[in-house]
Image (cartoon, rainbow, N blue to C red; front, side):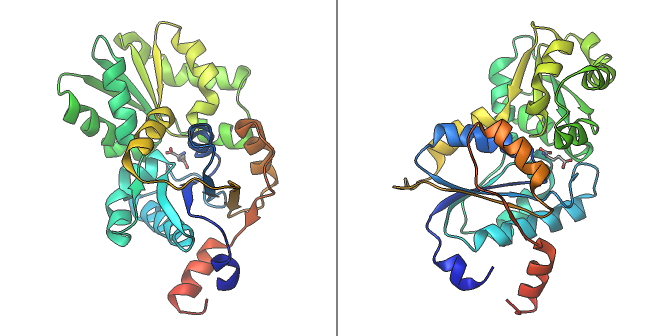
Length: 281
Ligand code: DGL
């Protein structure tokens, strides 16, 4: 995409990015909360999952996504990915000090603190998010008495990316991940990965109806409303970019966003980023 195309694009936008389809759970909530705003969404489907990769790789990928989106006029950049929020927020804020950036972990932690009655909370997240202990830190900064448990549920991400959101395979995997933690008298589960709300029904079924489930997208939308000045548009627009071919993404996106969306634009993010570094574009 050349500079001319970019510069003629309307905006400003609220930009959301994730490793793949997961950030759509955030986008869907934001679209409901801000129906008169324009959105950009970037899913790095070529390199998903992020959750099993090292912080160094996740930071690199996140900087590339932020670079791509920051070439558009933006009201703010939303990190629609817990793994990126957990390991790359400092690098992103350092690289874009003037860009309002919102992450998903603090809103989710706040919601968990407000939800738990017995102060026993379980975080489900990727390996990267759980290893970072970002949720523990965020929850303890609000209430040090809350006991926080964490489970890395790596198989949930490929299930969501494949669009396998229910049925016996999902149930068996959810049961396997949750069975020990459910003996710990927790009353709140945080879906600490934006892919997991796609599997919420199964997770709730295995956890039982007495356990409250926190999806940080809702609290993030509330926080966004009060944090930044956002511009309403006469003709709000949604543009989606993916780093791999978009057909599978498209299937899940239309299912989840419950609206007809434009065909996503495929971009070679890595090539564009390094060409820009060499000042070729
Ligand atoms: N959806 C992302 C998250 O919230 C990342 C999942 C992955 O790519 O492993 O952590």
